Amino acid sequence: MKNVKKNHKFTKLLGTLMAAAMILTMTAPIGVSAKESATAYDCNMTVEESCYPETSYSTNYYERAQKFYELQNTTKTVYIRHEGGYHAKDVKLYGRKIVKVEKDGSFVLGEWEELYTNTGIHGGGFTPMFYFDINAAYVSFAFSYDITWGTDYPYSGVFWDDIYNTDWEGIHIHLSGTCRMADIKIIIDDETVVDETNCSAHKEWRP
Image 1 (cartoon, one colour):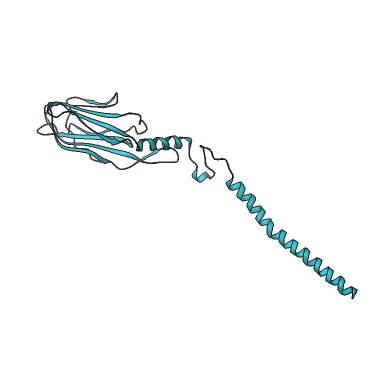
Image 2 (cartoon, one colour):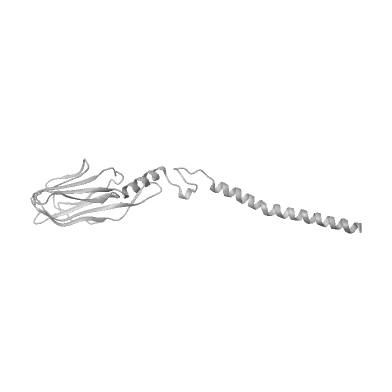
């Protein structure tokens, strides 16, 4: 009878030890996994890089992304004045806008868009200066116009491609001269970017 009791106690103790061993075996991987998880995810994010190298962003990115947001919610004005002694036709203003900011902070531009077109503008002061607003996210521009019974496309091409210089407020396009001696001046704020007199003939620039 005593041997039966001893065997029962031994069996019970053995069972307890085996159960404890199984618990330790099961919980060890969980502890390691939790530690690895903490190492992988618990990091201090900075503007230089995120927790994940493959999605790291440069300091420049945050500045440019903020600028992009501001430009999207702002408008700028284009002014056109025609004082020349001729009839301007096929007057077109094109633009490309920012559509994305890369991780290194560079702007990605969309396709050229026709922002303004006019089939004919009378010169000689008969048509007053007119203006229109555009979204400030447009950062690259081209202008083109032709003359009825005059020089073919005295100006036609890109006049602004300084896409990171965005702190200006308006574009001023001034046409003057005669049908065979056309002049054009384009000013962005106080900076003259085009100043041509007695323009020669060109082919029409197209995107």
